[in-house]
Image (cartoon, rainbow, N blue to C red):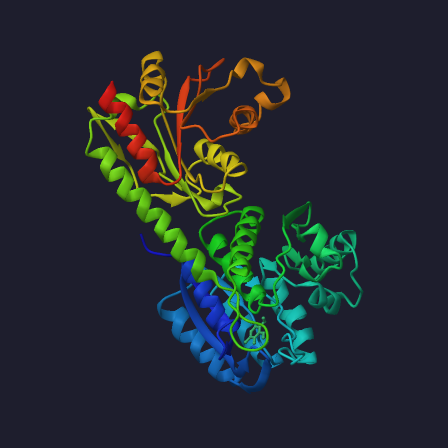
Length: 447
Ligand code: PXL
């Protein structure tokens, strides 16, 4: 499959934490292909920006023309644009090539205070670029500058988003990292799509090393949009991505070190690799008889995962094929809902348990598990409070919580005998896919 192409337009950052370098890393680690047009070269390190060497608008236009006339772009992301001339050229090319998925990160100041968008360019950005943008992603100081008002609260962020939307941009995301009290309350972002507000919350990460946060966020957002996600989903995906990048930031230099998207990418690749190896072992064995009517999935969560997007599984599940099993596709993050919910719930009790697989329920299988000496636990869907039952996914969370609250250990299996329209099911838990598959094979041998 060809990756989506995201054209990043911005400044070069010699410390590679922000700017074009951050954009390309983020696009690549989200599975896209990053193209670039450089608007300025900065001499920069963790202590600040020591120099800015602008590229002429005409040469920015040349770069855009080269890329767009040949390769094309599924989305465009803009960052540091510096001058009114560059902003005009960028707006002109977006219009000329009819690019719809345009993410504008209205970069204005570097951390040390260096101006990355001159005053006149700010007006040009509002007049010429925002009306072409699908979404604009200011932080609080940038939003304040755009509307000329102070923002002190979440409701202030919402008002600001509505005012910015009036400039003609379809969606506004205001990033709340600068809001006072974030340490306690967490970092909240607000999306306004012209009709509704959406809120995205992540825990505050206490680090001085956050250089490149905005660039990374906007680039991840552009990839999600290029892949076809809705704006509301893309904002959630980008938030998860940037939060992980901040968690994994690097303390390089004497000042503010860079966020690190690649740590997550490497760990993600390891998850996918381990899943693939584990499923090879399954397919080499005659375990078709263990696959339930709804088929199986085997999942592996990233260390510290909090959402389904950080849990990898098999799209289309693991299906019975004669006496064995097959997968329809390579593992992907976000590919499982039910089993992902289970492992995320388990991880709230023990973070080292990151893998799970569902197999068929039968009295014989439960008997064999007990014979092997597996810790066997179960829940009864009949005891579930009515208000949870209708919520897809919550039901399993409830059941697993019931078990783990009382058992005090993480069992090898959690089963239930089903309910109205619900197939009975056994879930195997383990620290990694190899351990889970090993448990499957141990059961298989005894049957
Ligand atoms: O983080 C905004 C930003 C974007 N682009 C470049 C930068 C910075 C911040 O320093 O240097 C080139």
